[in-house]
Length: 305
Image (cartoon, rainbow, N blue to C red; front, side, top):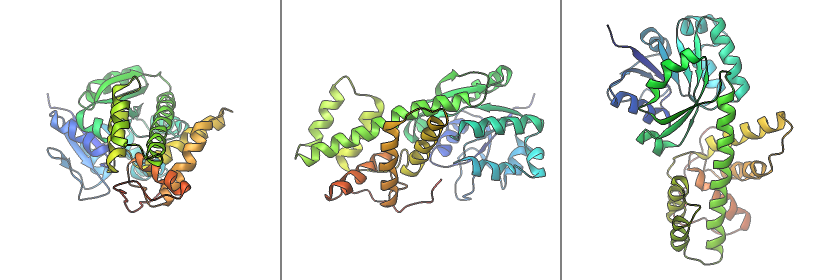
């Protein structure tokens, strides 16, 4: 029996290390990226999305947003049905839940199968295979996808059979993440403004009950001013907008994320779209009128989502 080939569309900050984990585990993998310079050792590099669908029955999609997904899949054109019919599409990126539900309908009507599998974690956990996947879809499709995710994810959590539910769970997780990291940045902004040793603050936080994998990693960045991207400001701001939109649609208040969104927008405007989310501290120093944090970490802005 021939081995199954898996397709992977999107080799960005998250997609590239995720695909690398699959290839490293011996998966027969065919990948495609808009950037022809990006590749994954051990994988076949496809010249087009069409080639990915020709070679693979299961295709993982890790693209920036709904517009990118629609463009790559050819949604709204005859190419869409040619791509997805007879294939299982695994959507692992972050989009609005209602977009995912609509995509599920379109794919099934075209003769394909669909699993929603957004992940919790940034580039570091992706490189280590320590992501957590939230799954939604038909149970039979989920049973096919779970073993495939094991090189990338230390855990998979079922969130129901209805696409949209896993992405709502992802947005709930990101509500905590964004507010926590923004709060951590403000703690360092507060300490620095009072002349405290931020290295000592890091030590106290890491020794205390609030310490976590995320807080330890982000605190180290805030001490040194290292804003090399793990989760980019542009992407986090996009996620923040999805959360606020989903809350508003349900009539829910989102007070913390409303403030975080303002700070992320200001950080983006300052030129830090491709810096790590800890660069939100720049918006705080700008509001205060102080100099930028040590290290600055300025990275030219990229395009918005």
